[in-house]
Image (tube, rainbow, N blue to C red):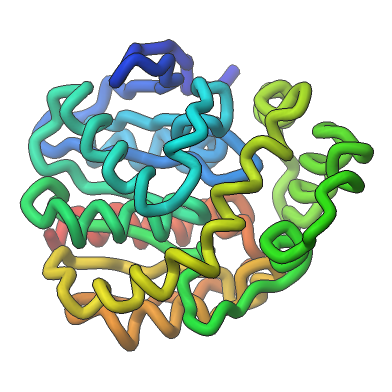
Length: 271
């Protein structure tokens, strides 16, 4: 039985799925789910994180089981929506954890809304300019013909992605939620988000030196999907950052849950 108990809240007219902890209230933390997973990606770290903060985990609009809206399917637009989520839950300068697709979005949020976020933990998301992406993300970003992805179906696409999780067996409730979150055409409908990387990551790159928010970059040293060059790029360009490379692959929050939780909670305590 997972400690994560999802609910829904309407934010800016959209149905957003979230889970909330009963942890300490002296600090708030907003956890953004990676793709193609869901807020259940924090199942392996939830109890450790909840011992240090009041947690709100969300499926970003269009991902997991939150409602999709086309105009939000880019990192810059999603960054602005993160601030709406903060307001929707009445959070005051929360710590934000944004792995994978949350990396670029939360950095845009910190750049454009500098007083709204206390600290960031990012990583495993596309960031480097020029783009440095592994498989299958590089194909998802650049392939002109999406028909093969529509033909393979969401279950095959998600299964192929989470099949890259090494050294950690997904609990059945987590696996089933990942698959249920991408039924129908949702997986292909979400591709515009990462396909915006070639246009938007250079814009983000120009903003990185202006970000005063403390940023901890946590990535898997052996990530085949988003190579470590992305984490190193962020570390070079962010003025207040720390880089942690963990002996894991792409899904570092699950493959190395204890090390990931330690990095996150340590950052909260420092900031």
